[in-house]
Amino acid sequence: MTNPASVGLTAPRKPAVLIVDDAPDNLALLRTMMLRQGYQAFIATSGERALEIAQRIQPDLVLLDVVMPELDGLETCRRLKAHPLTARIPVIFMSARGETDDIVAGFDIGAADYIPKPLRMEEVCARVRAQLRLASGSDAQKEQADRLRMIVDSMDQGLLIVERCGRIQYANPACDRYLGYATDELVGRSLAELVARQDSYPDDCAAMEAIGNGTREVLIRHRDGGLRAMDLTMTPMHAADGQFVALLHDITHHKQSEDALQRAAMLDPLTRIANRRHFDAFMEKEWQRAIRNAQPLSLVVLDVDHFKLYNDTLGHAAGDLCLQKVAQALEAHALRPTDLAARYGGEEFVLLFGETPDIAASRLAEAIRTTVEALQLPNPRSPTSPWITVSVGVATIVPTQLDQIEQLFVCADRAMYAAKESGRNRVETALAGAAWETVRNAAMM
Ligand SMILES: Nc1nc2c(ncn2[C@@H]2O[C@H](COP(=O)(O)OP(=O)(O)OP(=O)(O)O)[C@@H](O)[C@H]2O)c(=O)[nH]1
Image (cartoon, rainbow, N blue to C red):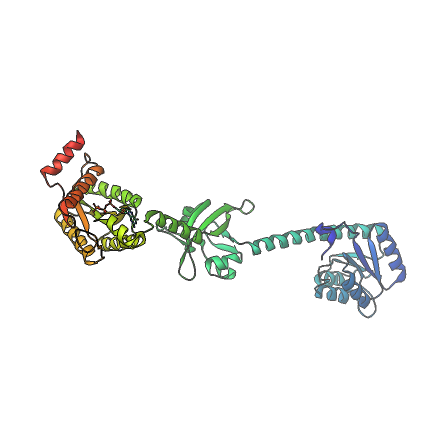
């Protein structure tokens, strides 16, 4: 029943009471009483007429005589309850018969109350008042429930009501999109099952405890088998002990762009190989690992020969392309997870080879040098070669806590400059044994 007064959208209107009785005296008396109570009063002298009026005006209450010719009160009430427009209108029976069967039958078909005849007007008024109060209360409740349902149904976030052990009691329509299951398929499943976990828990309760209260980032197993990154917020429902409201917010796109940003921050934009920042961080980790495992670490520093001439002859754009090709050739030689090729700046590149002794590193450096030369990128004015070539310095160390990364760079740089000085397009290896000790001692002084 949509009584605008209970919705609170318009000015309160007087409750409307439909009085149905085949006795005109009764009708007149009741009508007067209802008007005096401040209600609108409508009258009908037969069941058929009552049904018509009720559908048209949808009163807030019907006072219905049981004994009437043709359509009696019981049948009228049954039809009122069967019609969607009038089903929720409270009906109070009035009957002189007072027989238990009638009273029971009346309540069974949905009557709200029963008043025996002869009518005592004060009692009639009190019962009408009570029923109107009840009806307006349940209207307001329904209104509130409808509004809540509308909000939950139209939410973009997934909302679940979950028991302490993770059993899902309710899921809103957004969960379908988030998890790939229709809402009724989710009811009864365990939320813990849907959350991908690294560790194993003895049971779902333990898993739910691990998920815990508050917001955390989780990977949700979608029905299609894929994993989706989501924020899961678990809030205990104080009104329902042991139950939680779980809110799911998809952050996959956010995570993807975050990952893309992170990856971009590690790459050199021109050559798409690692940049200096990434290389330095990688070097730091490999350095510490080499100390722990007492393993050799080799650094290769590489500089393009006569690159200024190349740029001046063929233009800066061709120079950029050349650097990209050299970078690809380098990266093709950094194959292990402990290897990394990076552009260190300008036309200078570096490669780190973890767990690689000097002989193997020199061989790798030589392979890189020949690969670049074999690219046959013409460098027409180079006095060294008709092609682009590189000068390469290699340094190897088994680092200890006493050593510093800079020492290794200094050695590899010196070797690279030595390669330049001795004619370019060659590999020079720095510091074996005593020579390395000289640098090590010099660094410690
Ligand atoms: N096209 C291009 N050129 C660059 C880039 N970064 C540095 N260069 C150029 O690389 C050249 C390096 O020149 P130099 O340091 O004089 O050395 P070089 O000509 O290679 O001579 P050697 O190293 O002695 O063999 C300069 O002309 C820089 O402008 C870049 O990103 N793109």
